[in-house]
Amino acid sequence: MSQENSVTRYAWLLVALLWVVAMLNYLDRLIIPSVRGFIIADIPMSDARFGLLTSVFLWIYGLVSPVGGFLADRYSRKWVILVSLAVWSVMTWLTGHMHRFETLLLVRAIMGIGEACYIAAALALIADYHTGKTRSFATGLHQSGLYAGAALGGAGGWIAADHGWRAAFTIFGAVGVVYTLLLMFLLRDRERPAAAAATVPDEPISITAAGRELFSARAFWALIVYIGLAGTAFWLINGWLPTFLQDRFLGWKPSGAWAAMLPAAWGDKLAVTAGSAGLWATVPVQIASFVGILVGGAWADRWAQTNPRGRLLIPMLGFVCAGPCLFLLAHTSSFAFALAAMIVFGVGRGFADANLMPIVCQVLNPRYCATAYGLLNFVSVSIGGLMIYAGGWLRDQQVSLAVPFTISAAGLFLAGLMLLLVRPKA
Image (cartoon, rainbow, N blue to C red; front, top):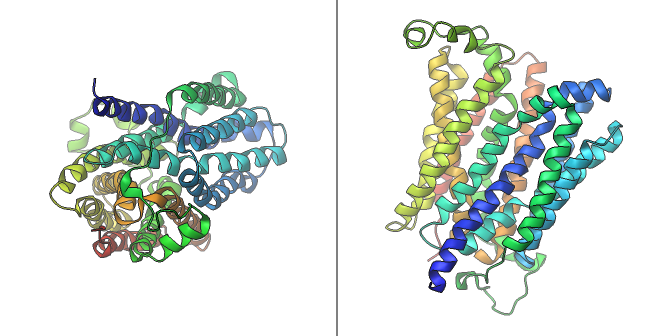
């Protein structure tokens, strides 16, 4: 067996191993909304305080993301991943053993530190092994684990209903700790590709060197604008789409041709209600994103073989289509059109998620790819958090969510056009 074949097999094993970590990453952070009622019944708190549990996590996550990326560039990517998984898994386990709001808040903050160090290190390690025509597809496979974790976050509610809310955190936290021990023997770093050589070969990786390299690159500034514009739509959809669907389509159920294709009993089950709006807002988008991330990754890898801009053009196409569809979603009174718009948006998001790290490695110095990704993650989370707050503030002022959705639609379209300004390295 040749070394090349051995590396190729391990490169795909690595994606499979990290897919589970990605799934736990989103699953652990999204358990808490699914068990809200159980937590408040056990630890009395206002809705504002309960929201703070997620807000603090998000703020810490965004602030620490660039640090996590730098650590992955400066030190072993393997150990950054292992420590990250261990920290957030222990914090997940401890969440199920907290009895006061203050300690619960502290655990969530530390959990944000742990999770912030994972994503850039994992994607950089995958990029180290997938250096050529499999890079976007491998990245997309890994990112699909995040979607799976988001979809499985609701499992916490099922566990809480039968065994109490603490059991959900205890179980998933313990799974993460055990998986960390397994990965200690299975994960391994790879010598960084020759293309990642520093501009000054003997220059050590440092915060100063990383900052000088990245912020002097026009491509990095273009990517900052790109991810900021895209983040306005991504986080607004995450935070407010269920409420938007409930405001706009509450009471809708299949009729006419829709109803004729379904069993009679399904009509009421598929109706948009206060309880089902969350499912309508997540399931179509998550499924479409899953398809988009696989198709977009494979398509980008293939296109990049004949066109160096291939990995840039795939998310560009996704966003220039998704932007108008998000505008349609904001203004249509047809649930069928709204559903189609959500699906196109999901596919476009998948195209982008599969290709961001490959684009970073292609247009910037790959020596600092994890640091760059961490900084971009910080920009996305920060702007996204503002959009989530703006959506709530506008609702308090009796302004329809169609307004921020329209703004985000324009931002998404412009984000796609921004990629036309990014040039691959020669």
